Image (cartoon, rainbow, N blue to C red; front, side, top):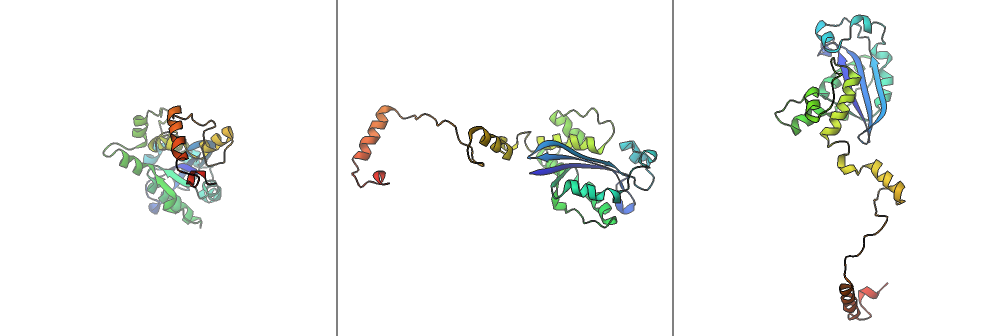
Length: 229
């Protein structure tokens, strides 16, 4: 199963009031494991950067002035995410901005059902506890020392680690996912999708119990089900 852990940085909180995306970062997971493939793009918002937003992510007007505008990167972004599930912390915020930007360049919206909100998962799993990305890093012992400012790719990489912890660590489902089944198949030569012992377990019956069982079925006669092919 392919998933994309995603984060954005913006000029503010409301696209309907003129705020825009200035950075997108994304990390690819396959069967809950990072593949090493990422997407990262700075974007010229075609407007000035408010001081309050600059203090969060450090992306200023001069730095962004030579970056591409969203319409020039929209298709590359869509080609990267495809129809994979998008794992996002506070998904409603990022999806609101992504779909506003896509609408402005006449691209189809991403269904909200395609997203998975790790903030909602954390609040359900730890009710009443702080659920910010930093708080979850502290809870799970994840090193986020380099996160002095918000950055979309860095935050996606950190969120990928947090997400794996939220769903049960790096071996969700006790490791019985498709990759581990395929690995077992390679090692012992059995049909894909099954896990069998290469050497059967030894019988726990004693010789006395085995002899008693044989005497019992012999007493059932030649027509007994035991002797039919």
